[in-house]
Image 1 (cartoon, rainbow, N blue to C red):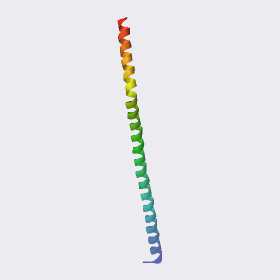
Image 2 (tube, helix red, strand yellow; image 1 turned 135 degrees about the horizontal axis):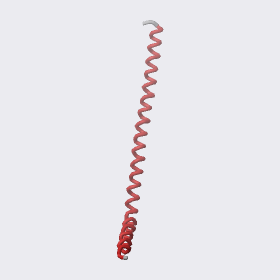
Image 3 (cartoon, helix red, strand yellow; image 1 turned 180 degrees about the vertical axis):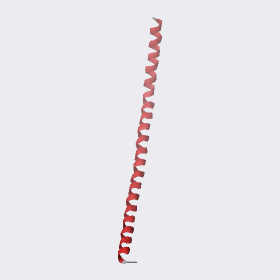
Image 4 (cartoon, helix red, strand yellow; image 1 turned 30 degrees about the vertical axis):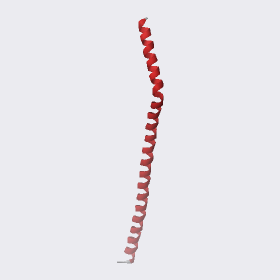
Length: 76
């Protein structure tokens, strides 16, 4: 093998190793982004369900009051 060929081969191997490190870094970043996005949506949906759970008694009271008002208005 000629020295120029060996030098090109060594450069190619070094470049491939560098690309491999970059690709693993990108994959790790994508994995963390997916985990963070899942936690974000779980928090948003959980907050909405929790808010509905705490507001539900007030909503039931409002709906009951509206039902009573509509029966009173129909009797007039």
